[in-house]
Image (cartoon, rainbow, N blue to C red):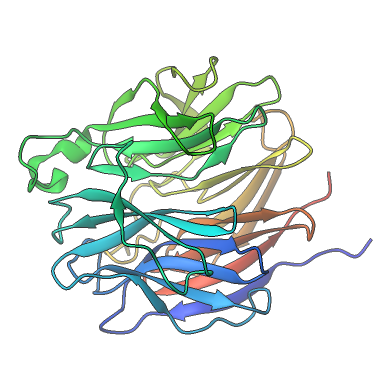
Amino acid sequence: MIERTDRMALVYKGSPPNHTCCDQALRILPDGTWVVVFMTGGVREPEVDNHVVLCRSTDYGMTWGKPEVVLQYPDRGATLSEVMVLDGRLILMAQTHDGYFGQWRVWSLESADGGRTWSEPEPFSPCPRRSFVRNLYRASWGTWYLPMQSYPVVDDVDASPLRDGSHRLAENWVLRSDDEGQTWTPSERIGPMAGWAENNLVELSDGRLIMLVRGDGTGSLWRSESLDRGASWTPRVSTEIPNPGSKFRLFRLGDGRIALVHNPNPATRHPNSKPAAQCNRNPLALWISDDDMRTWGYQRDLVRFPGMLAYPDGVLDEDSGYIHLAFDYNRHDVIYWGAALPAP
C-alpha cells in the first residue's frame, strides 16, 4: 500500500484593504471544482468592511484563483457561518451587522452555477436574529440537523451582544428537518454559556447524537447528548479534550470512526497573543476515535506553524483518503491542508 502524505497550498494572502481572513469553508462542487468561501475585508472582525468571497481551484487544491465577491455591502459587515452543497446548488448561511454585531440578521443565499452568480439574500426564518448556523449534519436515519449558536433576542434591533453583555449568554440547540431542508423544527435549548459557543454534531454507533461545544476560558471542549434524535439535549459537561477557545470540526467516517480536527491546547492565554493572532490556537491536529469517542487512539499534529491556526472546515473524501480543510493563519492568510487519513 502506498502511504499517503499531507498536502498544502496557499489559498489567499490577505493584504489591505482586505487584510483579515476568517470563517473559511472548503467544499467540493459536483463538477469537481473546489471552492473555499471565507470572510475578508478590513483588519479585524467585526467591521463594516467585512464581506464574503470565494476562491476556486480546478487542480485539486494545488492552485487557487483570485477572490470573487459573494456578499458585500457599503454600509454593513457580512460574515459566514455555513456552506452547503445540496442537489448541485451551493447554499450559504451568512450574517450581516453594523460593524459590531448590532443590527444582526441571518440570511441564506444560493448559487446554481458553482458560485458565479447568486440569488438575493433571503432571511433565514427558522432561526432568530443573533444566531449562527453551524455545519449541516445528515444522520444515517435521514434527518438533517443544523447546530445553532445563538444569543438572547432583545427588543432593540440595533443592540450588539458585545456591547450589552449578552454574548455571555450563548445557547446551543439544533434545527431538525425530515424533508431535506424544506421545513425545520427547533429542539430544546441548552444554555447559557459565555462566549462563542460554536458547536458540531456527530452520531455514535448506538444512535446517540453528540454535540461538542467550544468553551471559552475553560481550556476544553464541552459535550451534550441527545437520546431522542435531537429533540432534547443533556446539560453540557466538560470533556478531557483540550481546547483554547476555538472552532473545531467533527466528521464521521464510513466505518464508524469519528475524526476531530481541532487545536488540542488547554492554554486560554498566550503572552504573544494579539487580537489578530491568538497564538494558543496551535497546533492544528487530527484526532480519531474508534470507540465512540470514549478515547482518541490516533492523535497527529497536522500543522505547527508559529502563531494562530484557526477555524478548520472542509470535507471528508474517503475515496481519496483525505480530509480536505481550509484554515486561517494569524487571521491574514487562508491555507488549504489535505490531511491524510490513517488506515482502519
